[in-house]
Amino acid sequence: MIGLIAPMLATLVPKPFHRAGWIYEEKYDGVRALAYRRREGTRLYSRNLKEITGEFPEIAEAVTGLSDSPFVLDGEIVAFDRQGVSRFQLLQRRSLGEPIHPVFAVFDCLERDAAGLLERPLTERRRAVETLVPVHRGVLMQARRLPRNGLTAYRIARRRGWEGIIAKDDASTYEPGRRSRSWLKVKCRNEAEFVIGGFTAPSGLREHFGALLLGLFDGPALRFVGKVGTGFSRKMLADLAARLRPLQTDKSPFLLVPRVAGVTWVRPELVAQVSFTEWTADGKLRQPVFLGLRHDKDPSECTWSAREL
Image 1 (cartoon, rainbow, N blue to C red):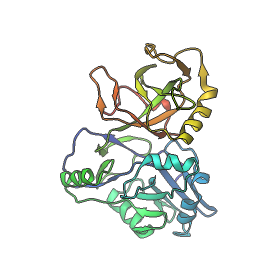
Image 2 (image 1 turned 135 degrees about the vertical axis):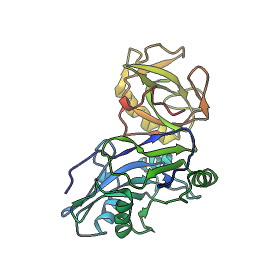
Image 3 (image 1 turned 120 degrees about the horizontal axis):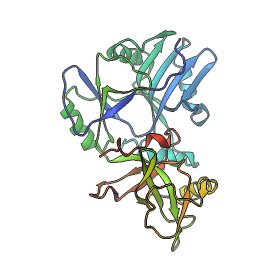
């Protein structure tokens, strides 16, 4: 049986493409998860190997019921809106107590009947998924595959409002912890993760804070990329304020201090997922909207050199 491993990651590319021998799947907007089915039950782990079984007990229970033999599944925990589109902010709202039902979309099988499959081609690993996981039942589903033409797949994703597509080499092996060129992602929506470096004072009827100051690490220094003041519910504002309070500091975490009035600085330890329309010419986010906190991302992963353009 395989031990605990970091999941394989996809590399972002700027535009859709088609390649023979590649398959195309929906790119989900959720939380990456590995499910380890062992004799004593199932444990779920995030991409940074934090155990999240307690956050999604219904998924762990459903995975346990698939088979008595040991196996390991890779997928994305998501929540769908009424149009069937996965939205990360719905998972954020669930964490604050709203009755939102998660689904585990499974796209890979790393172990079957206690035999490791990491060195086997994706086509074989996908067959293992299909023998274990229902197409869609309850909180489990197989990740949706698209036509084998990458350009057609991308047009479908755009039309349906998905976050994007993932293209995978059907002959590729599984590369734990590596951002591989055998898996490529193409986005339809601009969403990315940024480090929170401070917040402004509230005004009007807003409580707790006004906007979050965001940054990306440019080498060891944090580079200011703008502030986000929309996308917060009252519960989100209260929850974020409670998380930011113990991180307050007298010193700006940004190398070049932003010219923003009324700022309270915080240590750069929290990661926010934000949607935006584009980057401005001076390297700032245009029309950013807060979607939620990423507990599965380390701030050091949010870098200027790897920003999503």
